[in-house]
Length: 502
Image 1 (cartoon, rainbow, N blue to C red):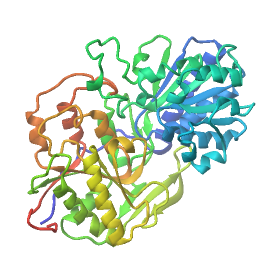
Image 2: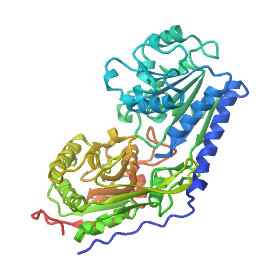
Image 3: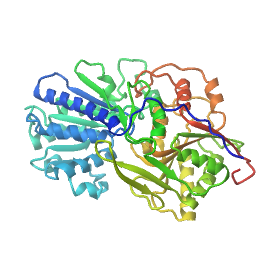
Image 4: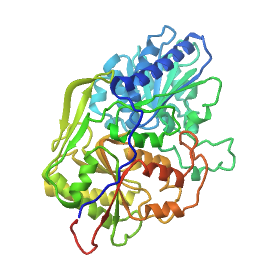
């Protein structure tokens, strides 16, 4: 018996390729001109915020802004920071490839020094102390915790001297993944430069969950809020959105828009025919499910008839169905293909493809909210990898939180509300669901036990604007219902006594 998937509403008023990419270029150019004016003293902006949706290519625009800042006669030296080392290291590599190790220095703690990738060491100077930075260094990178440690700014001034502003060691401080950095961490690095540029995804997970905030009774002071939200309304803050995304296939743009519904516009570089998944011969439920995923449309599969789980986050019966879905796909082999674009967003006419021997991003990643669920998913990955002799990068599993900032070809996500009996602050978090749904470049399959609609229908409405979320939103029930409307939805009934799919 086949599975009939309901189709989401058709995408309307979307532009692609160069027509979409030019919006990002124009927005970043406006930010660059504003930064130039700040350096020249022709305006009084001291905070410049470049807001991005997931997969908007913000790192490219950050590189543009660093390059243009260093070309300004009033800018001697810039700093680049972020919350985590794995956010800093790719930036160090990209900047080192442009400016070379004599001008790019990475400050690493002794604890993580050995973990710095070799590809970073070859293009940037990696040191553990400011005094060992190159004499002519123009870009210094470090995590916010390193920059914010006691006396570090004094050591920077002693080693490097003042920059063009004649007071501080840097003329501009760039903060990558800015909306993931808590305000109290930013307070430790703000004084490094008179001008701060924040770039990041406004829909990702907040720095610390609101329920852990000891100052939650005082709306005027919250040290755990993502720092840009404390400055967005200031007269001296310039803020602009990047209105296009490079990551998703065109068929997923409606889902992206559902997450960023308060944006004036959001378009997609990929056109409907630019990406695809070529499937092997499949039969039964697996054929219908993977065909819907391969269409590019975000796909929600609700499964009924499962044995009771040990707990909502320990659901071996649900993962057992997933294992049975994955096996024929991996045995038969599949191919993902992607149109190649130039920097302007125009297709070059070339096409990239990957299959059993992937290059770059992993092919399939299983994402779950809870550690216990990921432990079971990793056991699934290990079993299939051994049984089918899968190469590294074909199949992986991770928590949603750890996979933030990562990209893969096909995402299989366990819906955070699967099996839940209430909308607690963890499993209904906007940012957690946003990360799970916005990692894939080709296909998205969301799995859940049946009963999702009933849970949302019976849950009380909870209006409000939770911390770390873009714009005015109501959570959790209303937001979840809106997001579900952008999926192709189908139901699968399984026999708990059977080990095979219908």
